[in-house]
Length: 609
DNA sequence: GCCGTTTTCGGCCCGACTGTTTTCAGTCG
Image (tube, rainbow, N blue to C red; front, side, top):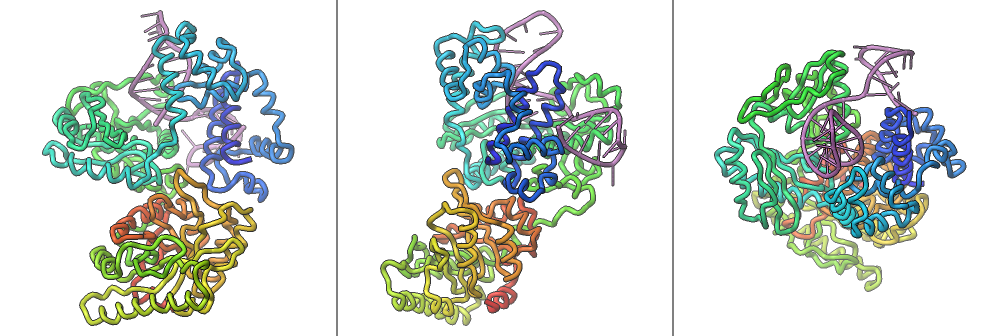
C-alpha cells in the first residue's frame, strides 16, 4: 500500500467520523493530520513499519500505529471498516471534488442515490447538468453550476508550473511593479516564495500606501492577456500562457504579518499558531493579538480594515511592518521561507540553531555541463562551445566548470573507437586550459563525462577510458522500473570505481511526467559515506533531483552533494539558482555542497579519484 | 486520537468566502 493510498484511507476515516453523531471532532482532526503526515513523509510508511519506526512520524500515535500494523499484516483494518460501513463508498470519491466536503457529499449521495465509488463523480456531473441538484435543500442554482465547474477543474488539474516558469513570471511582474513610485516592497507569496519545485499560482504582495494606484499600474501590465478582476486591494491578471497572477496590496505598517501569513506553508502556520497560543498570543494576517483564556472562548471578534493605514477595532493587535519583527516578537529567529514546511524549523528557530543556508553566491563551479564537443554520444549533445561556456561561467564568477558529455554510444562504436573519441575530447580540453592559462582568465575546465548505467549495472564506457578523465558521473537513462533491491545493486555496481565521483540526477524523476526510481537510500548513503562519493542536485527545471526531502536525509547522513545545471547550452548555466533552492529546502549549508569549494580544493578532491 | 518549555490531562489555528440563510454551516487555504 502506497503512502497516497494510506493517506486517502485516513481521510475517508476522518470524513466518516465527522459524519458520525456524537463523535469527537478532534478525533477527526487527528486523522486528517495523520493523513497529512503520511502524505508528506519522505519514507514509505510500509518501510517505517518494517523497521518499527512509525513513532518517528508526528501525528501517528500508538492507536493509529496499531491500526497500520493490522493493515500491513492483514490488508484491512476492522476498526476502520466499522467506521466506514454506514456510508456509501461513493461519498469518499466525491470528496475529491473541490468545494464538496463530507456533509455535502453525504447529502448528494443520499438525494441522488449515488453509491458506487467508480461512477460517483460522473453520476454527480450528470445530475448537475440535468438540473437535479438546484432543488436539494442547502443547494441552489449557483452551487449546482459550481459543481459542474469544479468537476471540470478536478479532471484537468495537476497542471502545476515548474518553478522556473513561475519564477520568471514573478520576476517580470516584479520588475514592472517596481516602476511605480507608489510601490515600496514586492514579494512573491506561497509555494513560489518557498521555492517549491512546482507552483500552483503566482501570488504577489505589494506594500503601498496607495493601493488604487498600484492596482491601476498592475492592470496596465503590457504582457497581460486580460484583467480578470480588479478591486480595492486585490487584482488578478491572466497571461497569454493561461496562467493567473494575483496581486495583494497592503499598507506598509502591517505588511510583515501579511507576508508571513500568505507565504505559509499551511502546516508551518498551524504549528506557529499553536506555539503562539501557548504564549497567550493569537496570530493572523493582521498581526498578533494578546488573548486570555476567557477571550479565547468568545472568538468572533472580527476586525474590519478601514481605509488607508489604520484598522478599526484593532485594540490589542500588534502590527508588524516586516517578517523579522513578527518572528522576533514570538521569541523566534526569522525563518527562511524555504524551511517553512512544518518540520522542526520552529523549534530550531527558538533554540537559535537554524542552519545557515547555502546561497547562490557560494557556488564556485558547475560540474555537469554538456558542450558541443562531439563524442558521438548516446544521448543529446550540447549546443555551446567550450569558449562560450567559459565566457558565461566567468560572468557568473566561477573558478571552474566540468564538461560531462554523454558517453559515446555503445552500439555504433568499437571500444577502441570510443577510446579515440575520449582522447580527442581530452586533448581539446587540455589545449584550451593551456592556452587560457596565459590569459587573465583563471577559470579551469575539468575533463568529465556522464556515463549511462546499463540495466545490469555495468557502465556504458570501457574502463580504460576512465583514466583519461578528471572524473565522471553516472546516471540512469533506461530501465526505470526495477525492484528496489535490483535498482540499488545496479547503481552501486556502476558507482564502484574511483573515477566515478557522483550519481547524477539520482532518482531520474521528471516533474509531472515520470516518478523517480526506487532506491534503498540507506544503502546508497552508506556507500557514499564509506567511499566518499557525492550525490547530485540536478538543477534542470524538469528534474530538480535529488528532491529536497532526500537532500535533507543525505545531509543528515553526512553525505556531500554537488549542485549542477546539466546545461546543454551556455544559457542554461543560469539554472543554478534552482538547484540552490532545492539545497536550501533540504537544509543545506555551504560546506555540504562540494562546488562551493575553491578550485584548489576541488582539484585535490578530484585527484583522489 | 495526538501530544507535552503552562502537560500524562486537557487542550487542540485562524479567518475568509460562498451560498443559502434570517443568523449560519460548510469548505478552503
